Image (tube, rainbow, N blue to C red; front, side):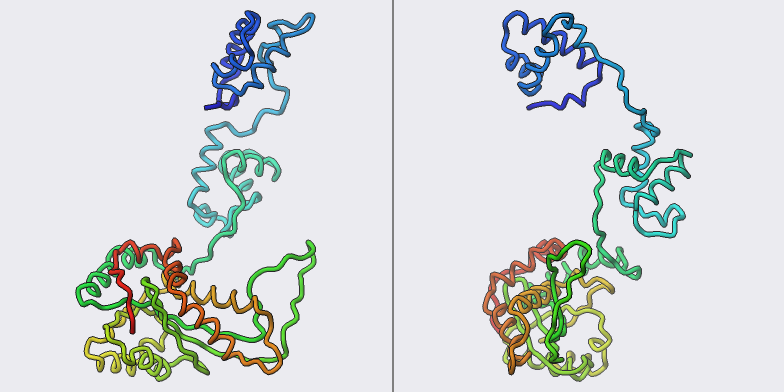
Length: 353
């Protein structure tokens, strides 16, 4: 394996060059010499060239003192900067900002080491430490890491075990809205000029609910208006109609899902339907969120509604395509944010309503 010469000290590299030129002068191939030191073949030829010529010789192979400016922070101090940033936020050090910008890092260094660095120097140092500029994922402050861990490691595995024992299916439920004038995705444009996308004058909109499971099962229904307890119950009745197997249904904490009328309906199914609630502020734990993202991107690729075209028909067509593609549905469960579901080893036999 080729080695990076920068990993060696100046003294070690000087010794390598001296030994190498002695062997090259004994008619050994520069490429073979370089290989014996774990270097690229070009290193051997470069050593030979440096030592060639009148007045050069081994003196040309000696290490020289660098002429660049010395770094203001020691290697130890740079490592401390990395440790202070890794997995932590500026808030924890008294800064009124949530992101590590070069200006915030410079202020941190000034406060911690009383050293002033330019923004360019900070950027160079961060790159040297292996840090890159990234867009952070947003998470609600109310989100509880402990509740999420408990859901993944205790609650859901328990649900999966109970469902397997009962021969029941586990479905994840979610609702979403579609508008004719919505624009999804990103577009290329001239730098500095925000593109304007013309949308149809139609204001058609429709809401949809769906339920998805890891075996490829997918159910959906559309509805008009806002979600409330009565609408939720009517949708649940449609989903449960003629369904042979019992269902453990995982939903979010929307108030409509917790109304008394919903509890009464669930009780009336006599165990045919059991509901479970995801931790608060954790939509990424629900694979049905991925279904909606896919459906909206797919629908947007078809362009705006044509004259006379109904939003209902567009949405039904997209969701029916998903329903008819169990392999696609199973792919949603391979996303890293919902991998805990397959890790729970749920029974994978194909399910039919």
